[in-house]
Length: 222
Length: 313
Image (cartoon, rainbow over all chains, first blue to last red; front, top):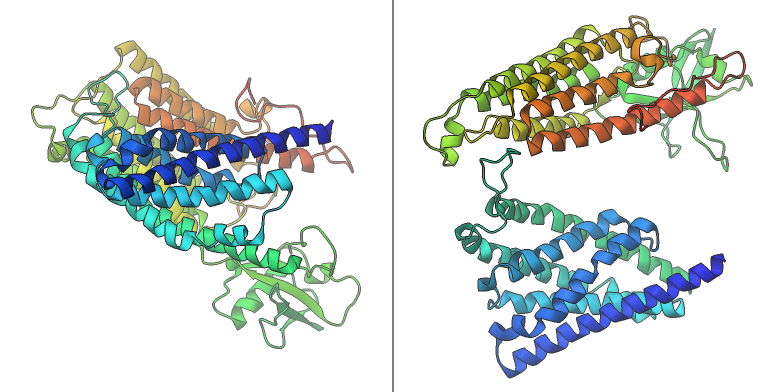
């Protein structure tokens, strides 16, 4: 019974990882093709649907961690997925004025390359039981470039959205109300910007630590 | 008769060259003092002394009890007595920690009540009406934290005198931030009070719970001697016959009373967070007491009780 369940788990995770891989591959392909054929102002429109689908599917990963299907700690995946969903839905989808900015291109390229490597890595591991060492190396090395570019793009897009957020009343709760609560999306965005600096640093250092562990382990295996 | 005790770090490195000399009859706190005498940095509350772990053995190392004789830990008459010293980092007394945690809310909350200029600065102009609920809330809140400070200095008896310094920053951030968060909304110019009856029920219930909480603290105090001796005891009397951590229970219900009376999302968020923290503590305490009072070797068996929130836990 146990090995049947573990096979089901493997099959499910294999399918999950490869499907999301395809989603991100589409994002990268469409982004590059649009940049080649037209210009950066059209990138968002081209990638919107696969981007939203692939990024939102990542919510399942929190579930996987919670129920123990995978080993990743929820504390590491939650801030990453949180910031991605915030930018995808809370900024780009909610404030269309941001969509034509060049940072959208750097954003989707950084995200998609990172995710293509990550999902193919996990997809192979679940399907075959191992992943080639060059893929392992890619997974734990490309972040040196794409974390900074991705985080800069995220922070930049939030910053650009600020005047539009302030002008609109979207997602704001005003007083007076029965529950004496207020929420200002503009100030929340400022707080979010503030969190990016220590948060981004923490994630970067975490990845450096993970890199040491992963690359030294594979070195020892041979 | 003297004996020599070597003091090493967890990695085996000698911390005090040549060790310290102690009388044969010395107790562990004499050892603490001797170490402090040799190295001023390591005042006794910063030291954690354990017996060296035998290589290959599992389990936690034995922590030395300050009241026991040093010799008691070394029955084999060994020549070299070795203890392992861990630096717990800078320590503050619990009284200091609690005082600063509680002082923040006590001062910050009334600032929002007495200085509506804060709200004008953010953009809420116009005349401001103060509802009775807001005034009572301020008195209730300030009484609560004043009570806590008084209990810290006159009621509570602490078993471990100190807490790491880093906890001061962490705990103050928690109390002070939530204090400001709640104070902002309850004292807001656009605050909507609940019905008069609901407000009275809320504050009345809350006050009752605060009195009960105070009595719980008195009962807990009497379990220990003046310098915190007594170790773990089975709490008895009043609500403790029903609930292990009746002090936390009354504290949680007291905040519930405050929130029923003031009705803010911020207040309820605080209630949930505080309740989960206290529930964690209560579960751990209940388990520890059950483990110690297992009914064997003449020890009483810990009675069946709720842990913290009847009828759920």
